[in-house]
Amino acid sequence: MAVFVALGAFLMTLFGGWVALRVTDRRHLVLGLAGGLMLGVVGLDLLPEALEAADGEVFGVPQALLLFVGGFLVAHLVERLLAGRQAAHGGTSAERVPQVGLTAAGAMVGHSLMDGIAIGAAFQVGEGMGTTVALAVVTHDFADGFNTYTLTSVYGNARRKAVAMLFADALAPVAGAASTLLFNLPEELLGSYLGFFGGALLYLAAAEILPEAHHEHPARSTLLCTVAGVAFIWLVVGIAH
Image 1 (cartoon, helix red, strand yellow):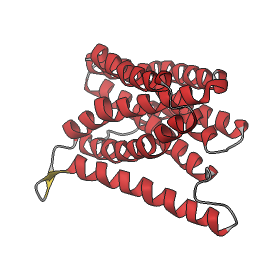
Image 2: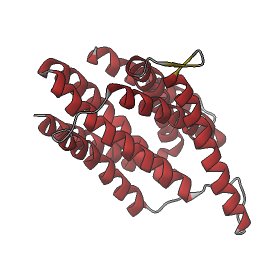
Image 3: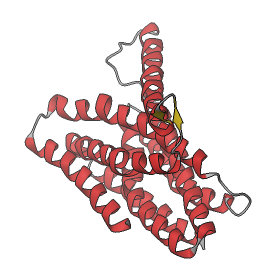
Image 4: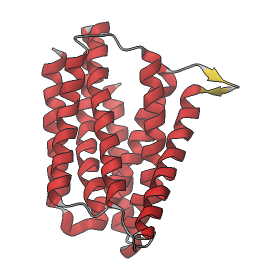
C-alpha cells in the first residue's frame, strides 16, 4: 500500500518540475514562488514535524533546533567553499556555482527519499496514519519537484541535468517507501534529519533564491508569488491535519 501511494508522489513531483520548466520566461516569478514554497515547507511543515519527532534537548536547546541551525551553517559553508573554488579558477564569487545547485538538488532527493520512508513508517503504525502522512507528502511534492528543477537550473546547470535531478527526486519517495518493507525507522532519527534539512533549505531560500528573484525584477508580482508559495504550503498543511 505504501509503495502504491508513493507513486502519487512520483507523479506530483514530475508535475511540479514540469510547471517550473514551462515558465522559465518568467524567471523572477519562478524564483519568487520557489522561495515562498521553500520557506513554507521549512516553517510550516519540516520544523514542526522535526520538533515533534525529535523532542530531546541538548544543553537546554531542542535537538531538532540545534540540527536546524547546523543545517543552515553547513549549507552556508558548502556554498562559500564552492564559490571560493570557482574564484580560484578564474570566476567570481558572485557567479552562480553549478555545484551548489546540484548539491541542493541532491539534498532535495535525499529529502524525498525520507518522505517515502515516512509514508512507509506511517503505514506501519496504521492505515489512518499512513493516509494522513501520504496526503501531506503527495501534495507538497509539487513544491519538491518545482524546487528541485529550479535549484538545479538557476545555478547554471544544463537543462538535461535539471531534468535528471527531477526524475531522481520523483523516484526517491517510491524507493523510500519500498525500503520500509525491510526495516523500521526510529522516529527520533527521522526528526533529526528533518531539522537539519530544514536549516539547509532555509539558507537556500533566504540567502540565494529570494535575493536572486528580486535582483533584476523587484516587482510586486514577485513578492506576491512568494506570499502565494507560503500560503499554498499553509493550505496543504491545514488540509493534511
